[in-house]
Amino acid sequence: MRKSIGIALVCSSGPLGNLGHLIRWRMNRSSCLPLLCCAVAAPLLFCLPPAALAAHKLIDYQGGVTLQRKQSQGWAPAEPVRRRGLSVVSQDRIEVKNSSQALVRCASSGNRLWTVETGGPFPVSRGCGIDTVLRLAGRAEGRPGGADPRLPFLIEPRATMVQGGPLPVRWNPVAGVSSYQVWLLRQRDQRLLWGRRVENGSSTLLPDSVTLTPGESYLVVVEADNGSSSQLDAGATSQAFRRTTLLEDQTLARQRAALPLQGRDPEATALLQADLLSQAGLYAAAISRLEQQLGQRNATLPVLLELGQLYSRVGLNKLAYQRFLQASALAGSSADPEALVEAQTGSRLALQRIQVPQP
Image (cartoon, rainbow, N blue to C red; front, top):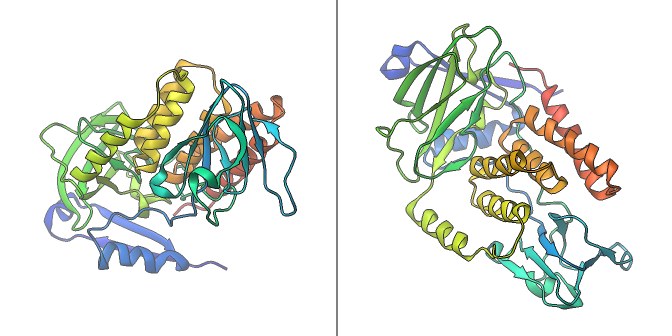
């Protein structure tokens, strides 16, 4: 039986004490030590979820491309590639026909992009090196939270890195609530930096007067006029966000400029851009890019699956569940068994996290 340990910080003085606000942490015994180490021993560090082994990804293809999967004994028959975003391992083989193209994002080697040469079949190790990456291992380990409709749980920015510019703040609208108090705090010392009351809405923008220090982590707290708080969300322990450093901004700018976008259709462009943002930890920006694509075009399996995984990663399980359900319906009608398994697994795990008792 899993035990929960409740830790409460009641600030009797300083900005939080003046607000009379109780910030509560909730964790299970297995996660207690890492969270305490993050919050106390290394307060300057931004706590991301436990790193999983990353999988290589066949992120785009055009024309005639076939994939031969490595099995425990030998290889499966080569099958035409019909969907972007397939997870591949080093021993899988890719064949690219004349006038066709395939692009793989390698999990190792700094997440480099490998344009597969015409011909083959070539093992993925030809462009990404030999490693022990497991199939589908790159799928994110989900966080709890983002499910209780009674709470104004944070939607954005949540468990992500952010860059400069206007920063949108969004939360779950609670039925019967007409106003919310929104606060921005510095994570390492809970210093209050900004606050605003929002009437009849569930979003706002940080004003230009609020400067986020590169490399610093922050926390947004939302409290509804009925007393419910975003800090009561099951994922409240891990929803801080961090401002990127100047070096990270420069690196991302170079990687953006190097993306091979010329000649690619809108879906491929969106997936490439979102993948780059996700690899950089800019999950909120990646979600925004894919949701934008979804709003402009018909829903497709690659976009829905990526959105489901991204929502799971940041602990927005209700949204993850919805996107995985959509993907399941599409995969079932398109006879894509691998996508169907991924979508059904994602929806099942998201549903399990939704059904975890709330604090």
